[in-house]
Length: 289
Image 1 (tube, rainbow, N blue to C red):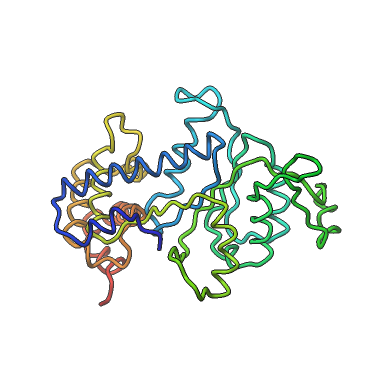
Image 2: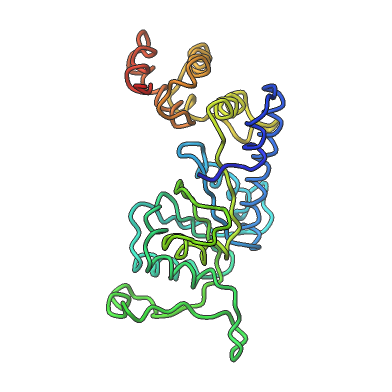
């Protein structure tokens, strides 16, 4: 899993919660800077990290700054297109062609299988390729004649020049080390990775995750742009919010998964049984070992 190098190094030493929080602030600044780089048309991006820790929501929040008429507006971009779930090669070809113009961003999310699919990887490589055709002086076209009949049915062309930008969000375990004997999977994925910036958004352990959750609970940053919205969404009373956070902090090493998504599950249990939510959480969310 992609874990921030600075946070991983820090996790191997003794540090106070305040010191960890300060590095986490820098970590989220890094994430924002990378996403801004895509919005400003500078590069493509792979965001890799632990499930449920806000990669998608953070991406959406940052990109909203760049929409036309937004108060944070800089370079206007159109509403990003999202590819999620099971994405076939032909579906990707059609959707990426629809979002091929400069200023358009496609977010490929929750589709780890496509990073193992040869056809999808070849398509991504073509879209990410920045080489210029010597004859035309233009970027090379993305073509897929293999599925010409299916493409015609979708009312799109058999080839196009991709000038948009891609953000690929994945929980997939990606080997990010030099390897003289790479696996076949690594050989297929490397051409895509080499054409993107790679953001390691994961946190190293439950201590760091819990501190991050508390940061967002307390309203990360003065302008409170990033918050734990699930408490508001589920209409959880303030005293119960604190009980849930303290419960999670006390038992942070007993959860099967500790993440922002876990907080949302806790809220659901609280609304279901306000008098017994903690017992239900132990039954549902704690690891058996």
